Length: 78
View 1 (spheres, rainbow, N blue to C red):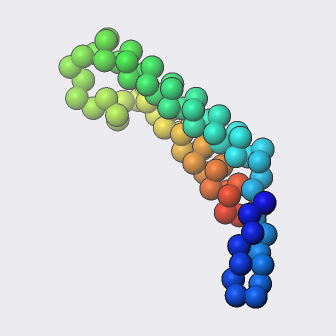
View 2 (cartoon, rainbow, N blue to C red):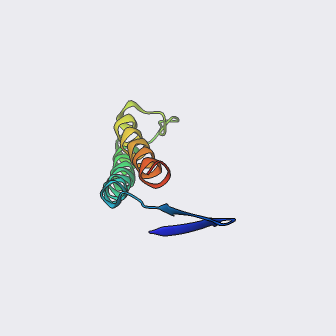
């Protein structure tokens, strides 16, 4: 629990710990998966210029984006 004091008012901010744990797990899975995917792409397609915009990378970007959204929701909107 985080206590934020504004003047004479105390506001209590509780994070939803389940969402933050899920978000952390998704972020780790997404980053590690993206790293392995880029290593595979580098070995199979060494001349590819757009490694970050490859269709194979989209699923990892979605997982990383979902993790960021879940973390934001668990921290800010509760």
